[in-house]
Length: 57
Image (tube, rainbow, N blue to C red; front, top):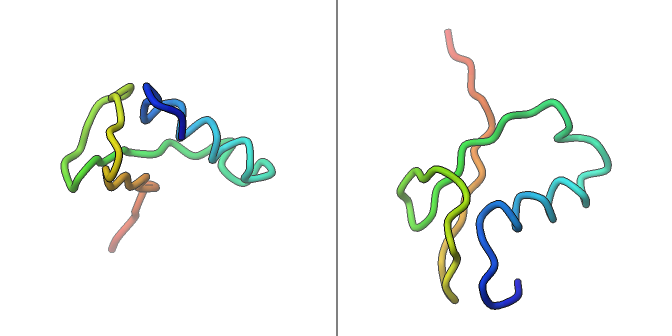
């Protein structure tokens, strides 16, 4: 990622590379194990997780 990139930039990049697999999926975002609202600036070494919806039963 380029300096000044955000979680939204990263999500856009991942969605573009997913060949449509994530088109109808809403993802939650966590940075360094904390849920965040987008966009959040990223620093070198940040751990980012995109969490898909989960259904249990």
